[in-house]
Image (cartoon, rainbow, N blue to C red; front, side, top):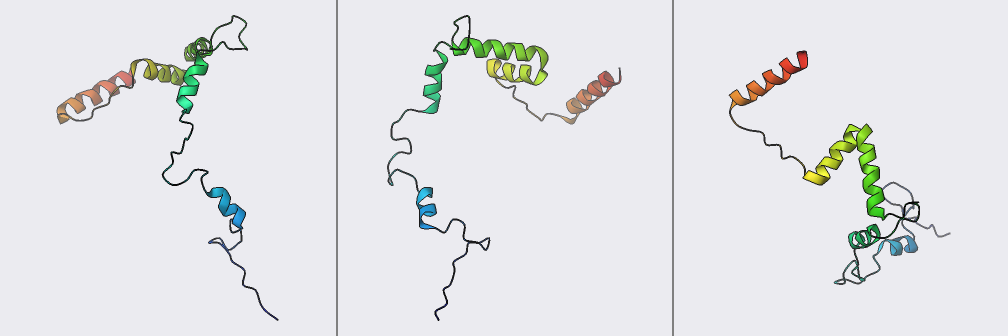
Length: 117
């Protein structure tokens, strides 16, 4: 009687060893071909969709207007939403750490005195 040797993966089972499993992992394009053969990015599609009228809005506004209003309403109640909105509009504030130890000590004193009051 011939004994067959069963292949196992690094976990000790046969998951992922079937030829069809391996085939599904290969990309559809050939080597050297772009990963996005049609050349239309998700960002470009989103920008186009944002200009279209939102079918769920009774006022007939675009997606852009509906989403902007929703973001502003959410920022009224949630500080994290307000922070995200400010970062999008004004850009994130660059935090530079450095300078003399005296400046850092003064800031530390100011923060601790302010917090104590």
